[in-house]
Image 1 (cartoon, rainbow, N blue to C red):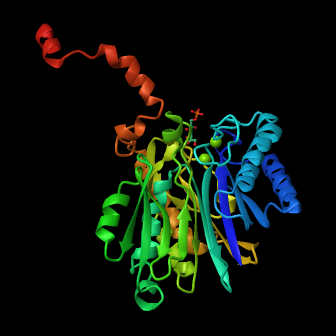
Image 2: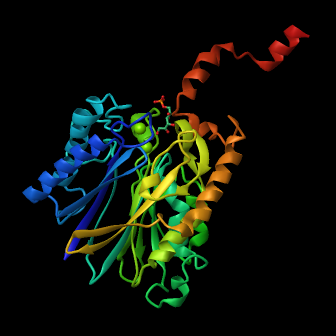
Image 3: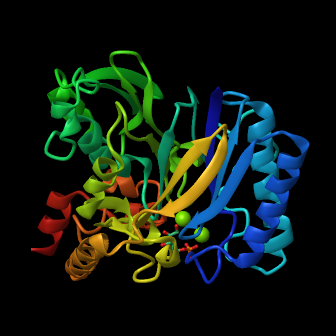
Length: 373
Ligand code: F6R
Ligand code: MG
Ligand code: MG
């Protein structure tokens, strides 16, 4: 059967600053999705959090961009805002709900969406990644390594069904354009683009032999939509595993290295992406460090069997320790680049107001030097 997996997230207010999601927010969201399940809008759902982001994982048979499913997510976020965030005066209630009313599709309205329709295989293992205090481009290095780097994924060499490689659908989030590039033949072009994760973001990955979907990710950038800083985009993505796709272990392997991502503290700093289990899915030190959780499911006629909490494993202890060490090193750099992001990334933050305030105090350098010497 054809099934659609929709992973839709938003920060609609959080508990103790931007730290995590409050139990009452989960409760309200769960009752909304249970209602939708009873009414037949969705087949199944699971709700979790990545730091302060509420994550709705839903299956249905309505295809990508379906109005009733997107409206369900929007109404759920609204209801959580009203019945939990505002009621408890949680921090930044309704933060990511940029639009005043729902208008057919969530695109451009604030919540992040990773969504795809595919034929459910005889056995369909899936891993869903959700991150906090970072941006969609944070998935670029791990997705590249899963689907194009044989040092991470020996299946690319060994497994005949992966040997022809994968197509990377890459989005220029500033121009709202898409380009398809093929691995392995065009890996240098792929890397030339995705090495700029603030602009070029992997949207999805398709198997070249048959076009089957391997992975898809959220690509929205709130600051580009709102024209100002409204928190980082805290992205989601999911990856289909095994039997012609990377094995679960090949999918998790890139996260053993806590690579640097943008989005820590005020969306303005680089920091290591720390892989954690759900119990540690909270942001504390310097509002971070940026964290990623991974939930694994088996689909069973659209039912979500699971989850397996994939990073809740001692095998990732060393990666977490390394992330802490990198966090320590980065923070010793204080407010200086490259620990702080560069000027083009800071354009959408509150730094803009400071520069604006000072602009009339700048004089031509030669004039000033002559008058003081
Ligand atoms: C939120 C985030 C936080 C906030 C910071 C300041 O996603 O990354 O680091 O940016 O806590 O928040 P405000 O400006 O709301 O006081
Ligand atoms: Mg928040
Ligand atoms: Mg967040």
